[in-house]
Image 1 (tube, protein in one colour):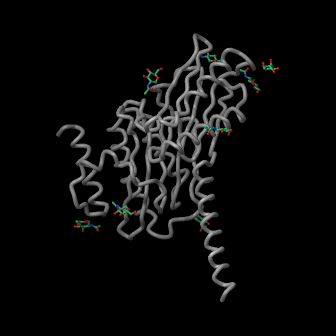
Image 2 (cartoon, rainbow, N blue to C red):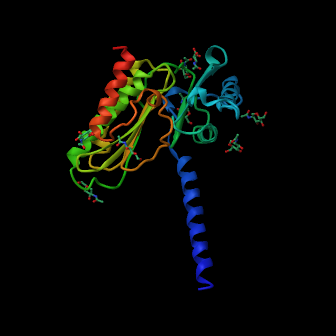
Length: 289
Ligand SMILES: *[C@@H]1O[C@H](CO)[C@@H](O)[C@H](O)[C@H]1NC(C)=O
Ligand SMILES: *[C@@H]1O[C@H](CO)[C@@H](O)[C@H](O)[C@H]1NC(C)=O
Ligand SMILES: *[C@@H]1O[C@H](CO)[C@@H](O)[C@H](O)[C@H]1NC(C)=O
Ligand SMILES: *[C@@H]1O[C@H](CO)[C@@H](O)[C@H](O)[C@H]1NC(C)=O
Ligand SMILES: *[C@@H]1O[C@H](CO)[C@@H](O)[C@H](O)[C@H]1NC(C)=O
Ligand SMILES: *[C@@H]1O[C@H](CO)[C@@H](O)[C@H](O)[C@H]1NC(C)=O
Ligand SMILES: *[C@@H]1O[C@H](CO)[C@@H](O)[C@H](O)[C@H]1NC(C)=O
Ligand SMILES: *[C@@H]1O[C@H](CO)[C@@H](O)[C@H](O)[C@H]1NC(C)=O
C-alpha cells in the first residue's frame, strides 16, 4: 500500500508529461518542404541571400504584436532582380506564441533543407512559410501540395460519412471565402452523421486571395479527397494558398469563431441540419439579403 500510492502517482505524472510533450512536438511537426528547384539558385553571400536573411528575420511576428493580423505575414524586401517576397501563415486557431515558434522553426528548417534556393515552401502542422524572387502576394496556387490520411478506416456507413464531410467542407469553404479580405479566412465546424459519427473539420486560405480565388483554391484541393482520404477517418491536404483537414475527433482550438459569436441565434440545436441552416444564415447576412 505504502509503495503503491506513490508509484501510481508517479505513473500519472509520467503519463501527463508524455502527453504534454507529445502535444508540443505534434504542434511543431514538420510535414513537408519543396525547394522548387526549377525556380533558380542564388549564390552564397549574394545580395539576394542578404535580402532573404533580412526578410525572414523580420517575418516572425514580434512578441507584442497583437494577433490582429490573424496569423498572416507578408513582406517584400530588396530591389529589382534581388527582391525577395515571403508569406507566412499560421493556422487560425493558434496563439501568437505558437505561431512565432512555428514560423521561426520553419525558417531554420527550410534554409537547412533548401540551401541557395530562390524559392521554397515549408509546411508545419500549424504554419506555412514560403518565399520567392517572384511576387507571390495575391496569387492563388495549389501546387506544390501535400496530403496525408489517417491509417484508420471509417468502420461503417462510409458513403454517408463522406457525404456529410463534403457538405461540412462546402459550408466551411463558403464561410472562409466570404470572410476573404478581412484576414479571417479560417473556419472550423463539426457535424454528427445520422449514424452518430462525429466529423470535425478546418479550412483556411491565405487572406490575400479574392473571395473567388479562395473558393477555387478549396475546390481544387477538395478534388484530392478521393485520392487521399476516401474511407479514412481523418485526412488533410495542404497547398500554398489554402488547406483543409478533417478528423473524427476535435483537433483545433474551438475558440476563434470570431464571426459566429455575435451573429448566432442563442440556443443552437447541434445537429447537421442546424449547422447548415446557420451557415446559410451567415452567407445571407454577408450578402446583405
Ligand atoms: C527569379 O529567378 C529566376 C532564376 O534565376 C529567373 O529566371 C526569374 O526571371 C526570376 N524572377 C523574377 C521575377 O525576377
Ligand atoms: C541549382 O542548383 C542545383 C544543385 O543544388 C542544380 O542541380 C540546378 O541545376 C541548379 N539550377 C539552376 C537553374 O542553375
Ligand atoms: C561568405 O561569407 C562568410 C562570412 O563573411 C565567409 O566566411 C564565407 O567564406 C563566404 N562564403 C563564400 C562562398 O564566399
Ligand atoms: C502584402 O504585400 C503586398 C505587396 O508588397 C502589399 O501590397 C500588401 O499591402 C501587403 N499586405 C499585408 C496584409 O501585409
Ligand atoms: C528560432 O529558432 C532557432 C533555431 O531553431 C533558435 O535558436 C531561436 O532561439 C529561435 N528563436 C525564437 C525567437 O524562438
Ligand atoms: C482499410 O480499408 C482498405 C480498403 O477498403 C483495406 O485495404 C485496408 O486493409 C483497411 N485497413 C484496415 C486497418 O482495416
Ligand atoms: C461540436 O462539438 C461540440 C463538442 O466538442 C459540441 O458541443 C457541439 O454541439 C458540436 N456541434 C455540432 C454542430 O455538432
Ligand atoms: C436536428 O434538430 C432539429 C431541431 O432540434 C430536429 O427537428 C431534427 O430532427 C434533428 N435532426 C437530426 C438528424 O437529429
